[in-house]
Length: 201
Image (cartoon, rainbow, N blue to C red; front, top):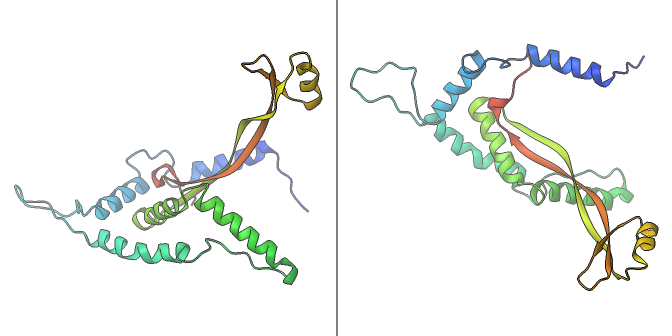
């Protein structure tokens, strides 16, 4: 049968998974943190785990950085080389227009409302350097004031505001504007820093 969880149950499960995850509570001394630190050093050309003679230069090897920079354009081409970031397959001939609109909307959200190219570039590069590339998305709501009607006489403003379910705002000429509060939402996307992310075992 179907198990239903309360919000408290879900939070408990997530909390337990986090406690068991690699990287939680490690600070700078844990295995995952050390591995990421070493990988980032390699990507910068710093090879600190090889012994060097006193008063001699440290070893510098840009092989890892060169390999990452070589493969990045090809990887980005996969996602941004065409006209669509994502495409929807129509279920029937009648669904073709809707599928095209859905693809156009997703493309708009990713590339116009968000910095899609840079977000994906950062996440892919993080995955190549530290083996963890994370994209975080959330729904963000903001309140916007909308001018519903202007120039309402002072004696009619209270009644008009009540009927329109709006607020009044006095203008410079003694009349009132009717203002409505509108809740607007959008999808926000950003690359999540890998050092702030733990990995479930």
